[in-house]
Length: 444
Image: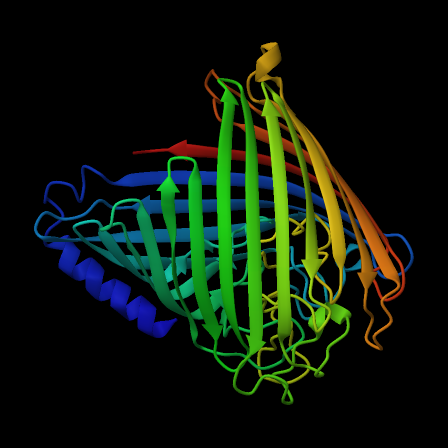
C-alpha cells in the first residue's frame, strides 16, 4: 500500500494549498457510519458452528473539486472493527470471513485500516487513484456483507462525455478484505497464487429511457478473461405498476498461467473439462412484476457444463504463497441473481430456478418497513467426476425497518434468515441468521 499512500500524501499536500478554493470545501462531505452485527452460521451436519457479534465504524471524508479546467480532490476512509462476543469455540479457525483470527484461532479484539483516493475531474470525466475503491460493476462487485466493506487499490476512470453513455475503465492491483487489516494480490477461488493486474473496460448505454444495454470486458492476468453482455428494460404499465426484464450473459476463458500449480481454479468444487482451467459460459434472466407495494420476481440461470462460473475471489490466497497463513480474505460478490445469502449456485452445469416475493409496507402506511422471501433450486450439478445428478436449494427471508423521522432518523434494523440444503459435494447443510443495525451520521 506504500505507493498509493505516498500518492495520497502528495495529493493532500498539493490540495492543502488550494483548500480555500470554491468547491473543494463547500462540496465536501463527512459521515460516520456504524454497523452492529450478530452472525450465526449453524453447520447442521459437521464442522464448527460460528456465532459472533461485532461493531464496525466507517468514517468517510469526500472532498469536492478545486476550481479550474481540471478539478482535484481527495477521499479518505477509516475503518475500525471491534469484537463483541464469541471466541475459538464458536468460530472456524481457517480463513474466517467475519473477524481476523489470532494465533490461537480466536478472534482478534479489534482491527482497523485507513485508505484514500486522489481524484481529478475534467468536464464529465472523473479519475480516482488510491486504496479505497469500491467498484459496483458487472465484472466486479465490492462486497459489503459483514462489519466492514471490501475495498480495492488501483485506478478507475468514469466518463459521461457522450449522452446516455457511462463508460468505465480501470486497473486494480490489490484487495483489502472485509475481515483483514492487510492487502493482498487478486485471485480466484482455490488458487494460492495472486495477480497484481485486473484490467477492465465497458459501459452502460441508455438506448431509450426504459432500455439500458451493457458490455464489459475484464482480464485478471494469469487467471481469466471475461466478456459480459447485459440488457435491462422496464415497461411502465401504470403509475404504480411495472414489468422489468433483466438479462445477463458471461463468457469466461483461461488466461496465462491459469491451470498451473498455484494458478488453478477449483471450479467451485465441481467439474472442469480441463482441470484447474477457467472455461465457462453463463446466462441468466430475471423478470419482476411490481404492483403498488408488491413485487414478484422469477428467473432462471444456466451455468455451462465445461466448468464453474468465475469471479474475483481472494479467499484462498496465503500470506506467504504457501498452503498456510490464511489472511482472512474470504468473502466476495458477483453480478448474478444467485449470489444469495449462503450459496452461489455457480457450479458446472447447474440450472437454477429462483423466485422472490417482497412487500413495501409504505403502501399500508408504514414507511420504512420492508419484507421479502426468496427460494432458489439448482439441478444438474456436475461433480468433479462429471456426474450431473446433484442438486441444492436455499430459502432466504428478511425484514428491514428504517426510522423515518425523529432524532435517530435513518437508524436501520435488518433481520435475515437463510436455510441451505444440498446433495453430493455441496458446501454442507446450513442454517444462518444475521441481525444488523445500521446508522449513518452526516457531519457535512
